[in-house]
Length: 102
Image 1 (spheres, rainbow, N blue to C red):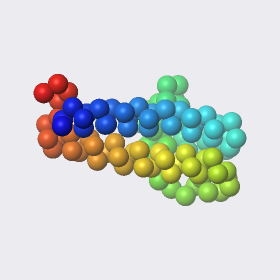
Image 2: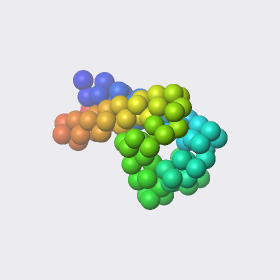
Image 3: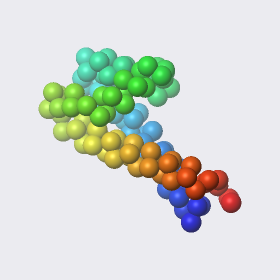
Image 4: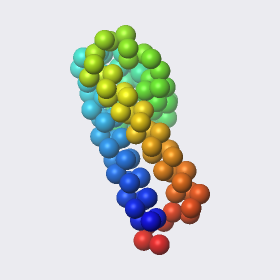
């Protein structure tokens, strides 16, 4: 069971990171002012604690609704779900002393 929990957590984290890259790309290309307001976050280029925090705040705010862009709206909803899923799986892993292969 711990191996399954670790696998699901790793897969969720990977999916979250991929969607962050896609979301920031869509924001940067379609809504540059909003992307800057969200901290100009990029997973590799501008990955600072401040820009990361601004991105998380943006994900959990209603700022994306101003765009009227359905793609951005769906990406944000999925990011929220994945973020919460990763947080819960992380908490479960810590609570159970999760280590892969044990």
